[in-house]
Length: 129
Image (cartoon, rainbow, N blue to C red; front, top):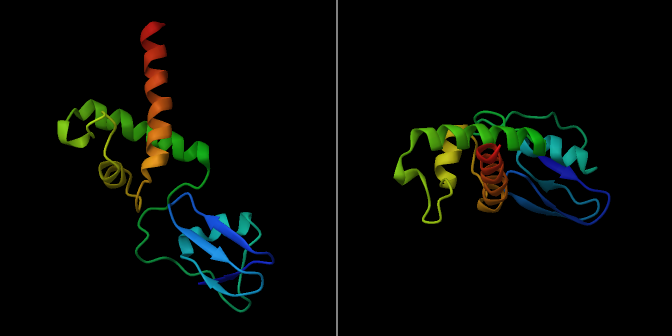
């Protein structure tokens, strides 16, 4: 689906994609990014219907708090499972394992690391309480 921006902007999605939009130039972006694009003021090209992304799988939350809650639940599950191969050398869950467990396209390591740090700090606080 093509979208139009009314200013020059580079859009970075929470799903990991990055697209450069030029003022008034229709630019393709996957349908799963529709809500994020609309929030940025980037609109579908006139005459287009919002299409379903056939390969998107389960809908990924776009809200940071919803994504964090889903990742926290996945961390709980992975830690409880306790399989060594599910973790990186530094002890964080592999992004591919998170993607598989959540049913999302792909998890960006930067997002995983930030949320993992927050989750591990919360676990330490629980132990101290």
